[in-house]
Each structure stands twice: as C-alpha cells, then as structure tokens.
Image (cartoon, rainbow, N blue to C red):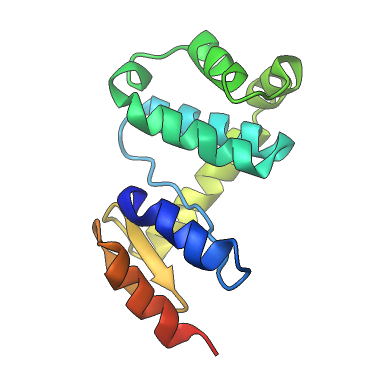
Length: 142
C-alpha cells in the first residue's frame, strides 16, 4: 500500500470519494504496539500527523525495534505535535488499548497478511500497484 498510497490519496481521498482507515498488525514484538500507539496519539492531535508519524516509523523500522519511550516522544515532535499532550496520551494507555482492540478485530476477521486492503468487502492482499487499487475502487464507486 505504501507505494500506491500517495496516488490513492491524491486521486480518491482528496476528492472525497474514498476514506482510508488504518488497522494494525501487532506481531513484531512489543514495539509494534508502541509504534501504533504513538501514531494514534499523534493522530488524536492532527489526523495528518498520524500518517506522517506512521510513515516515519515505517521508514525507520530498524530503529523502532529497539526504541524506548523517548524515541517515540522525539519522533512525534518531528511531525509537529505537542510533546506534552503526546506524552500524556502515550503514557495514559488509551492509544495502546485502542491499538490492541483494532488488532483483535483484525485477527477475528482472519487477516494476517500485511498489507490487507478492504475495498467495500473486496480484500486485496500484499503490496499492489496503484492500478489494482484503482480497479477495485472504481468498481465500488456508485
């Protein structure tokens, strides 16, 4: 999805035709949960900050595996969110609980492949080119 994401956003999200939602797969150790919670906390302040932090953490996965709380606090600062509010959110546990809830829902749906994209019930598995998403999206549009 990450390769096609910018084109999907430009073509469909920015025009109001599509809404993108994120659902985590928390199977790469404790920092899968912490990174997801960090992105959620950024997104609570600014929805675009979620995606900015998500992309930054994804791009730096090697660091994320060894990251501590301060790493996530500092990473959030790079996307312009209020650090005190972010730290309060991150430490408060609400974002961690939400990430676990979303992961549980994904597991109940038997989704285990990263990424899995749901376009109105049609699941696309694995990294796909923009054309595959466009075909599924166009078929689902009224």
